[in-house]
Amino acid sequence: MKNIKLFLILSLLALFTGCDEDQVIFDNQNGFAQSAFGAVGQNYGVFDDGSRVAEVRVDVTTVSSVDRTIAVSVNAAKSTATPAMYTIESTSLFVPAGANNGYIKVTGHYDAIPAFQIFRLVLDLTDVAGTHVDPALSEHTIILQQACT
Image 1 (cartoon, rainbow, N blue to C red):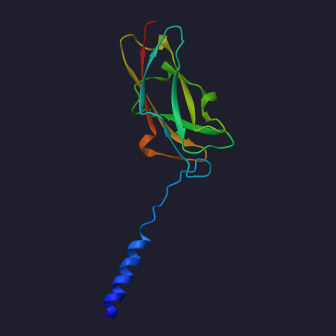
Image 2 (image 1 turned 90 degrees about the vertical axis):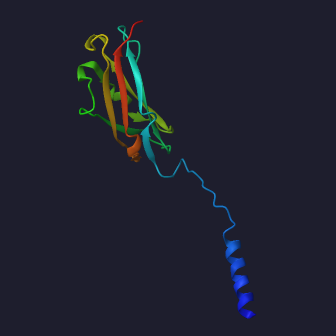
C-alpha cells in the first residue's frame, strides 16, 4: 500500500511541475543578432533618365547604438550582368544606429543594358558588423532590364 501511495504522489508531482508555460521573450536590444536580406529578389527596370534606384533591404534582429557596416559581394558565377551595367553605392552599405534595417542602393546604367534583354545581378550578404548572417537568406537577385518612361 505504501508503494502505491508513493507512486501516486510522485506521479502527481511530476505532472504539476510540467504545467508552467515557458514564455519566450525576444530581446531586440541585447539578444542574438542575426542579419539577412529582406527578400530573395526583385525586378529593376532601368529608365534612361536614371530616375530609379533599386533598394535592397538588409534586416537585423537587434538594434545597436552605432552604425553597422554591411559587407556585400557580387556572385560572379550566378550573375549575367556586367559591372558596366550597375553601380553599388558604397555610402549605402550600413545599418543606421537604432534601426533594424538598412538599404543597399544599386543604380542601373541604361545605355550599358541591351534592349529587350534581361540580366541577373546576384548579391551575397557576407557580413553585417556584430551579427550572424542567416545562410538561408544571404543571397539576393536583382533582375536588370531597360524600361520605358
